[in-house]
Length: 333
Ligand code: FAQ
Image (cartoon, rainbow, N blue to C red; front, top):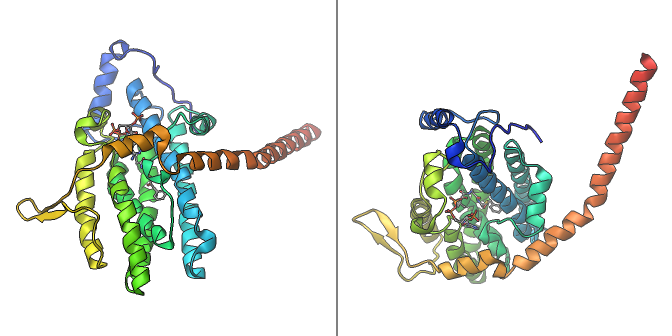
């Protein structure tokens, strides 16, 4: 763990927390100062950050699977190299984020355990299958596009280690979004069959990417606290709307249609109005009943077990080095 900056007790009731410390903490958030690991923070702030950052890290790790599925089937060496780099970036994002969460006093092993035991959440979007190469384009364009929209404001999050991790992550997400859109553009300029494949991918990923922004504002249980603590800057619905406004013209430029008969531009507000999101599907996927939930978790558990010997070997090697260094020190004394 990077730090053990545990200056407050999560189980302590808020009323018992020192009012003066709380006021100073809030003033710091309001002044846009960063909260750092060893600063005092309310238990609930720590808890919400651990929840959000670890969920985000898990999403990056599970999110490698839908695309990893296509690395061996990418249509050219260039596409394979691009996809390989993207999936590696996602592993890196997961690792920065686990590191950021560790600064709040939770061990990485505990977060892994929460994921592997099925107790932790990760983004609903990664429980859908990637059926064709166009899905790789759609994921980059839509899923990474949604991720950027949601994550750029997190670069200004009040918690320093999370904000700093997000700056690098967003730069990489921007490359991911472009590679996805370029795949879609190539398919849409290709044969009729390729364009049809792109349209089919958009049909299957559109509504799911809108769900990435979380429940509608009236059902968002954490938003009020997260706004107060400057973790969130825009509401789930606001960010979703921004994403729709940015993405619909991009889809039209590709010559594609969106699977929403109610989608229309409202000149009075300057926004694209959209149809109802099927929140029952969102809830079903979150409860573990999405098309790929079981496969994703089974694969993650298998990979964890397959990698056990590497971790054991690395620990044994580190121990040997430690013993050799101790012996050398003793000999020199
Ligand atoms: N899926 O009160 P709110 C990526 C849960 S990374 C599953 O509104 P909050 C990169 C939420 O956790 C994608 N659960 O919560 C990539 C809470 O449950 P809890 C992940 C969801 O935290 C691209 C409950 O609903 N991005 O894509 C979802 O204020 C391509 C109530 O919700 C992040 O994690 C969902 N979609 O707002 C990788 C960004 N939405 O904890 C590979 C950071 C909500 O009470 C390939 N996270 N829930 O049990 C955030 O910005 C926020 O956590 C939100 C939710 C906006 C996701």
